[in-house]
Length: 331
Image 1: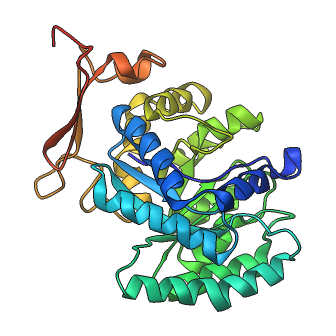
Image 2: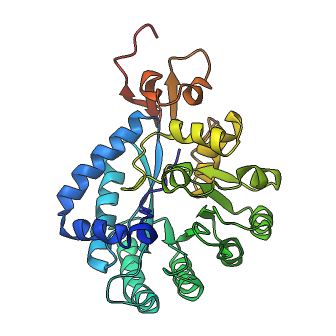
């Protein structure tokens, strides 16, 4: 399962929610960041998540973005949960800069340094993300950053069409994006383009709920043959650890069936990260990640809203039990 990581969406509502978190992230030590990160990942694991996308984006300068990537790398090496790492240096325009200046800095300084660190084995980065939005990073800087990231070997997986229709699908399919997140304002043409290109749409029910946005058009996307994944959008503004709750919201608010929600939270989520060859389903040759439920049917994980902690008896990664809920008896 996959949880979209650092996408704090209060920039338009409060005039600086991202920057509030950036200030605290810059001031925190690597050890402080790791301690809170480890605790949150453990809570996600207990809620049944075995693969998580972790994003940077609260540094906005090279020093802090690297600090966050080192924390993600340490967790990748030390913890039982699977991690896909995303560089999101273009999460907001840094104070005192224009979007064009920020893009130039990312392309000229951030990405070459990160490429060097990857070649040296210091960090592993899978994806590149940009907050492609009106008043943040618009088309020209977004396209330049994503192309530069792709040239460094990163998969394109970016924010698009959240608050305004920005033709994100058309841009993403042009660049060969693996996935695009949000898509509350996607057009019919965008849906058709993503379906044809097999570009995955990562839908985030918690974002629409908390920000009172219209929900993504999941039914139209599915009917058009588009690949849909679900994510929690875990961040300071959508503090949800549970993919079971996300699946419930997808069924109720986006009219998905439970089978569709399960596929979107597992195999399609793994596909959105380029990891469906080893994750997302129980098949011979794949990694042995699964959860064992104390329930008469798997659907109760969605049906019993907010009760995952009473249903998940075991969490298993790589064939090993990494969490046992001792509060569940009579299993």
